[in-house]
Structures are given as C-alpha cells and as structure tokens.
Image 1 (cartoon, rainbow, N blue to C red):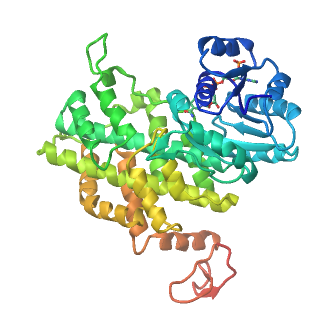
Image 2 (image 1 turned 180 degrees about the vertical axis):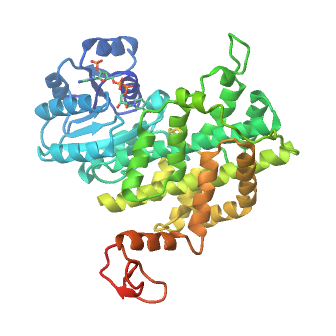
Image 3 (image 1 turned 180 degrees about the horizontal axis):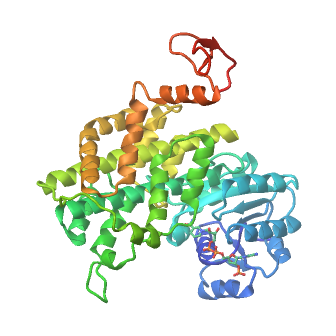
Length: 479
Ligand code: NDP
C-alpha cells in the first residue's frame, strides 16, 4: 500500500486530476476505472507520472495507505452511487471517500449520512475549472467532516490553483456544504455571462461597432474594476473570425444557449430558501428563452419600437454600459452570497463567506479581481447581511446608478432585452426602498384569505372583517 491518494473514474476530469495529483511532491496516485482501457491509456501516455493502476476495487483498496483516501470523478447521479457502494465494500472505518463530481447537494447530504454509518468519511467536493483546471489547478470546495479534512486538506492544497500565494481550497462546511457552494458558484457564473452578453448586445446595436471593435472595448474593461477571466475570454471570442465564411464567429454561432442544470438548481434552491437571486434566475431563464426557436419564430412578427436605436455619443454610452455591468454584477454576487448565507443557516453549516470569495480568485470560471473586494467586505464585517451595502460596493453603486438607469431606459426604449441588467436594478431599488407595496399585498391576502397583517404603529396581528362591518380585530398570527 504505497499510494496516499486514489482516483476512480478516468474520463477527462478524472485523468487530468490524477495527473495533477501525481505531479505534486509527495503524492503517489492509485487509479481505477470501471473499464480497463482508460487506465491502460493513462499509464501508457504518462510514463512520467507515479501511478499505481488497479483493475478491481479490491486491488485499488489494497494499493492505498491508511486512512485510504479516494476521489471519485464519474458521471453524476447513479454512477456515483454505484462507485460509492463499491468503495464502501472494500474500505474501512476512518477511510475517506471524496465525490469530486457535480453532485446536487441534497444527494451529497444523503450520501454523507449513509456512508457515515459505516464509519467511513464521505466528502462532497465541488471542483471548478473544467479540464484545464483539473490538470493545472482547480478551485476546490470540499464539504465533509473535520476529521477527513485533516488528511484531505494537505492533498487538496497541493493540487489547487493559487491566488496571491494562497491555495484555492478551504473546508467549506459539513456534509453538502461544498457542493452547495459549487452550485451557487455556477449560478453566479450564469449571471455574470448573461450580463456580459447584454452589454455586448447593447453596444453592438447602439453603436454599430463590429465584434472585433467590441473585443477592444472588453479588453480595455479588463484592465479596470471588471478585470476577470470571463471578460478576458469574451474579448477572445468576439475577435475570432470563422474560417469558413470569414464572418465574425459570434455571428455564425446559433443563438440558443445550452445549460447543464446547475443554474436551475441554484434558482430552485433559492426559491425554497426565499432568497431573491433575480440576476441568476433571469440569466437561467434567458438561456431557456433562447433555446425555444419555435416560440421565437412565432413571436418574431410582434411589434417592437418604431424608431431605430442609435446612440448619439458612442463613448459615453459604452461607459454607461460599463457602469451598468459593474453595478449589476455587484447585485448578482450579493444575491449569490445571500443564498450561501441562507443555505448555511438552513442546513447548519458554518461557512466563512470571505474564505469562499478567496478560493474563487483563481482556478474557476468566475475568477476576478473583484473577489478580493468581497473578501475585504467580509473581513471587516463577517456577519454582513447584504454584500452590496459594504462600503466599496455602496460607493460603486452610488457612482454607477445614474448610468445604470440610463442603460436600462435605453434598452427598454430600443426593445433590446436586458433581463439581467433591469432585474438587478429592480432588486436594488426594491432593497433600498423606504416603503414597498408589500403593504397592499398583505391587505389583499387579508381580504381573500384572512391571512392577517401587522401594523406599523402597534404590536400584534390584525384582521379586517372585510365581509362584515370592515372593523379591525386582533387575530391569531397565521402569516
Ligand atoms: P463523465 O461525466 O463523462 O463520466 C465518465 C466516467 O464515469 C468514466 O470514467 C466512466 O467509466 C464512469 N462511469 C460511468 N458510469 C459508471 C458506473 N456505473 N460505474 C463506474 N463508473 C462509471 O466524465 P467527466 O470526466 O466529464 O466528468 C466527471 C465528473 O466531473 C462529473 O460528475 C461531471 O459532472 C464533473 N465535471 C466537472 C467539470 C467541472 O468543470 N468541474 C467539467 C466536467 C465534468 P467507463 O470508462 O467505464 O465508462
């Protein structure tokens, strides 16, 4: 038993993760895959790596030193359960099973509970960064017990991305906390991408600039407060020409966005928790809308504004869009962190939000300078209830809100959909409003369902006798 770590599942993600592990000082990596060919190929193609190939679960377990530690990288869902069951058979109490796939966090909570009963540790770890990240350094979000973190922590630190000298991994919290945070990471990624897409669309249709010219705008933005991987790759994509037609590639790509479901999970979970992640929800819905060509064809005959959209001062408009993008991005992240805060409270996890923002600074898709400002905000105020109200963000919103409003107005008048820009602004205005029309909704609920209401001027719960003499009585609190 020479290996200190093992990997089960050697498709793209697993083989890259195994190579990453093997490349780090001190690691010897046991590898196993259901079908033999992937194992043979990996060993043959990477003679430099110190792998111990196994061809059965028994061999795999025998090649690992104790406590045995194995990372599963197989298809999420039933295959993951099948591999867990097989490992539980050959592992012993104190050993550690890690699921590095994209599991839905309630599955992770369920699996952790079941595996814990055998005395074996189970850790659900979100791993972000795609195949490049798996090979060179991902951002890793592990949940699981404190006991397993003692063994697993140093191993994961050895392979994680590094941001400003710190490894992009931290023990997020118990059981499903890691996969929960990975889910919200993906949701935020949806919002970030949608906001950038809306910015591009507005600039293109408002100024008539070509994709290549807009690539320059994004490259310029990438030198300032928007500095991030997604802005950087946006410039790359916009600059790309199609070899076949000579057209900008973005003009020949079918405009129907795909999704693998993590955005939807983030929104479903937020709905259940009662957290308004409107930016993420609009981004997810925008992808859905785009991928219904039959509906879009049918609706294409509906009228839009009569006047053509053209901005008078292109540079001023582009600066407005930049401000709107930054303000909306602040809101999207603030909403995402709100969901993590609410999830932690609901599931009893102790999650350090500042530490979460720090491990997203490298290795993952939403990596950005901006995350340092989030870390600062939680450093100063660990129990901050609304991230957007932290001094740095409040200042940015103060500076940007007029431009943000101009952009949303322009988009609305021009008939250019900007669901993420405008819903973020609506959330901002709702959150800061002194009074909301929720008072009227409470009145309506009391009218049709005797749901009662509270008053601003005295304690207690009240109901108006709407179908009687319309006098007010004190009532039981029924919400
Ligand atoms: P796949 O999701 O394509 O899964 C293929 C692997 O699963 C193969 O090794 C296959 O073995 C194994 N497998 C399938 N069914 C079973 C089973 N019943 N029992 C045992 N093994 C089985 O591989 P990827 O590398 O693309 O992804 C691995 C995980 O990582 C997934 O959960 C995925 O969601 C996640 N992922 C994460 C990404 C990220 O950026 N974080 C990006 C991509 C994926 P065999 O060779 O025998 O068929």
